[in-house]
Length: 222
Ligand SMILES: *Cc1c(COP(=O)(O)O)cnc(C)c1O
Image (tube, rainbow, N blue to C red):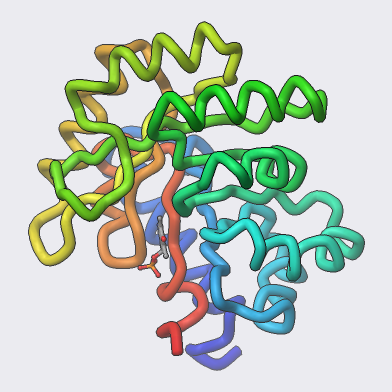
């Protein structure tokens, strides 16, 4: 195996997660590694599936619809996570395709997802996305809006597993991870979708149950 083989990268990331989990007194199995395969071709994704990896993340409904139906015929055990912003008019398609949606961040989307789940009789696991750094251009609900949005999501019957966030770039992520973990605890939520290629080990030590890793697995995006 060459150092840049997808299998080698996968093993290295899994080892790093296990180390970080151990450090925090957690089990490695309590962390799901989501291989973020946005912009990657089916040919780049297949080696990870062949190596036994099962959880993948995409950030666009249309791109996922183009790539995944064929891959899923070959690997029906693959699980798909939507990690990008979702427009309400794509809720139907998202519910039909994804096993988990990490970007539920507003009332209108809660309503659209609830209706789509009813119609498709499929209930992807939901994470409420929080704009943890209060950045104007970022997705996610404001921290103050979280209790209201969570109540709406629960009332609408969405299976809410936890919280998701993308901290501000270029600053230490740990304080934001700690804040998201605290918010999840306050609301009785177990799931924490946080940590990307540059900071997933830190996220695991602070309680991440789902890390979303792209470039550390696939190499730099072109
Ligand atoms: C692209 C993306 C990731 C993965 O980013 P890397 O830095 O390539 O690991 C994680 N989360 C979200 C929401 C993304 O859009």
